[in-house]
Image 1: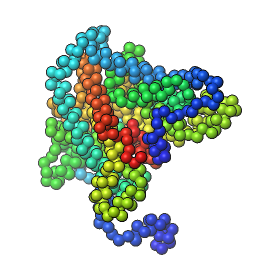
Image 2: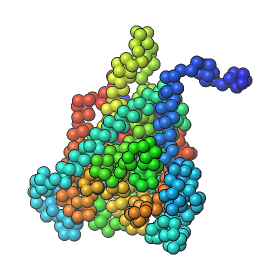
Image 3: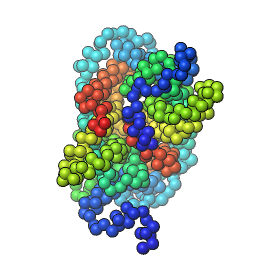
Length: 313
Length: 308
């Protein structure tokens, strides 16, 4: 599996089937290729390409599902620009994304270092991966119970320690951090494994040279491990950012956007506008904006952080 | 003692003789803490699911089930009479996790089988066949990985609604069943790295591509296909947003959506915690079983699937 992983990273797009021997097959394998690709092509066109175009079209219309979409130009976008709930959702989601980056990356990096140092066993890695195997809904409900204000075990513990109880889901200042904590709990081990895999790819002789040069463990970490991990860290960062921008499940099943608007994140707001209020045009327009934000994130990653290039080559 | 150390592999033996190292001990302590944070909540869920609600409120700190009962599980499977359910702190509303369990299995199995098989076919065309525009079409497929699911979910919902397939299993599986960009990407890479010798020999014997695909390529790719199927199945099992939109009625409702409904039916002031945690365990169990059986495969695939 590891060799597979290594090969996949470097396999360029252009490689593949060599020219068929003898030049008699002018058309190549086009006919048989069409047969092989047909089902995937149907899925690709019907459920990816057409909806993408339709989604952009809908964002310029007013549409409540029952009638026909009515073209309204950029009205939805101008309305969004003046919509305090939209800006609130953006701010709240931004806060969530930021907390996830900080908590998840820091904890995962630490955990990966620990695994690299003291334990590489599959059993330990498996135990750390357990939360990631669970659905968002399960993670959310599990913590909804553990963090309950009245009889949740965490609040029992907090009180036992002589501190005031925390309304993790019920207070506006804690609602988003709580969602971020749940997500961090679910993804921490997974992210750590990704970083750990990256650490394993750093050749041992690099460390031996550093040791001969008298580098301290801290220096080795800052000057060798971190820079060589850059592609993995950038990838982890992008996956975290793009994933957390689309937070929905945990919010939907615990706070439902509340208290007040504290957890009305972008995707939840889209869901409410489109499905609760039957305003598909408006919902689609926010979805287009979310799409653009995510595309920008991916672009920045390629352009500035050079996450697709390794320093090891 | 001497026999065991002599039999143990060398690194373990040297490790045992090493003097106590506070730094290593500290690292182990942190690691154990991280493992506890990952695993202990599940034990707490089990403990809660085996307790009664009234006892939970009074004995909230004991580690063992408070007033042991199977009642919560009976409630979740709709086997408890409404009166008993209310007496134990349930909502009394009917809920049938057998049905949701069945729906989840159907939904995840069909989408996994379909997307893995069709993606394998497409990946074969991208890796082994030679045709004009191959790399361009592949990069288009790859590009769809960047489109956020919420963006296509709205128009896809409209499509399924126009086809009159809302609240049908067909409507739920359609967007997933033909392919996933990730599966095509994953399998194409594997096919590219596979040795061509056997295929070429078969080709000289006059075998056609369909036969080569079914009799040589698929059997040789059994391991990555299994890994992909596992990861896809678990991902589909945990899917929430799309089934919530399309499958809101009981006969097609999947477990994840059922959990949300169960939670929302629970009385506000005194939620049915033991019932809810029993439901959580039921929903988690199939994935736990898969993990217990194929954990190593899943863990070892992580460095790869992260490219997703």
